[in-house]
Image: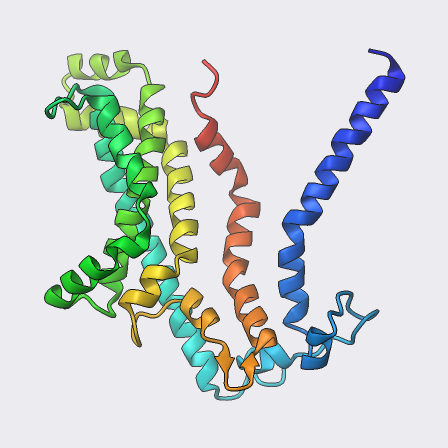
Length: 292
């Protein structure tokens, strides 16, 4: 390949990457700038601050989070902080529970042979993953009836349990691949040295598989944080999360785009921080064992 061809290929590749970056980041840019717009700027489609429009704190002021209202009493800000806390507790709790249960299930599928009728280990693993195909709306009525009987409606515990079920197949699939890459000889040596099966798992396997656990935990947090359907279905007042609050920014005069944008910006900020600072853990965990 000549130098001209190499330069042409490089220009095309970087051009495609720049276009894709723009497409991926533009929704975030639009949301952030809309939180500083007034109604006129939103309807007229102004995009560039200080060029098309003068930024205003209207969206953040409606939440009590603007510089001139942050020191004042605000019921909307209190509600936002409560919904934010609900999202944090539900997401972290469900992700932690899913990683614990999913790691144990994945370890069993990786190290032991199971037989349930015609199903073997690979069939069982696919069965777990196939649960993601089921539309959530199909489970609406069963969950409503079950949660009503168990008094779990509008509770954080209820959200944690349903979120755990939602992300558990992904955790099992990720962790099974992680455990498959760990030589079984390490555990056999630990057993010879006097460790029990649990001891070998906790002292040998878990430290090696920790990057995969971190990746599964982070992905679970992100999925739970963004979940809307079950949060809207199973909560009403006490356990409502941020996605439900964002969707509720409508009134008799239409959608309050500036308030919705400010709420959305505050909601995605933690995920942006996770993506920026923990990217290497996500990549390391998901690519472990890809090259043997």
